[in-house]
Amino acid sequence: MIINCRKNKQGFTLIEIIIVVVILGILAAIALPKITANTDKIRAAEAFNYLSSVSRAFGRCLDEITGGARIPTAADVGNCDTFAEIDTTGSLVAAPAGADFTYAPALAGTTLTITATYVGPNAVAADTIAYPINGATGAVGATVCGGKFARLCQ
Image 1 (cartoon, rainbow, N blue to C red):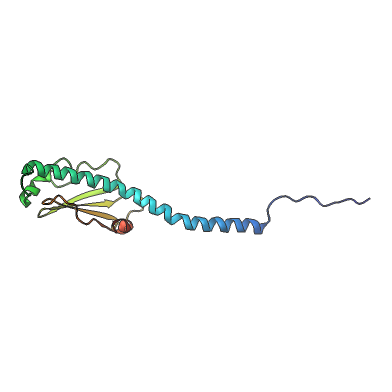
Image 2: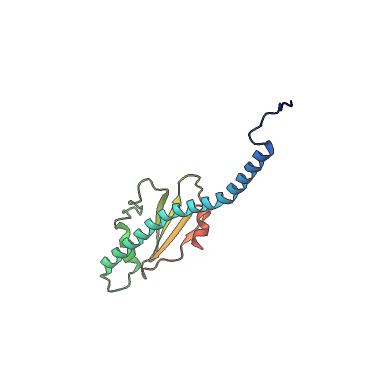
């Protein structure tokens, strides 16, 4: 009579575990940049939505001043620094609560440029979105994005 003294070993070998960890690491390295890029797009959407609403309010203010009958002048544009989103000191007052951005307007001639600066997690000073609104034509100029948002304005 022959007795088998070997026990059935169950489990994974060290090599199998290392291979699985390496594969998971490769998948994470591929996925992480895409997840980060999508997060930046979502954060920038907050700024673009707010800047768009400021643009519309700015246009309404100019229409009220000019009656829609003439092209706004620099003086007309200057008079719109008191509309709902901008107070008399030139600061934006209706920025969303808990926003990841701060907003700073600058008026040059008939162009109002609002710069959104990211102040959320991992922010650096270069993370900005500059949104120029031409008061004379009502058109939004070329938006300039910097830092982590640079690829969003291409």
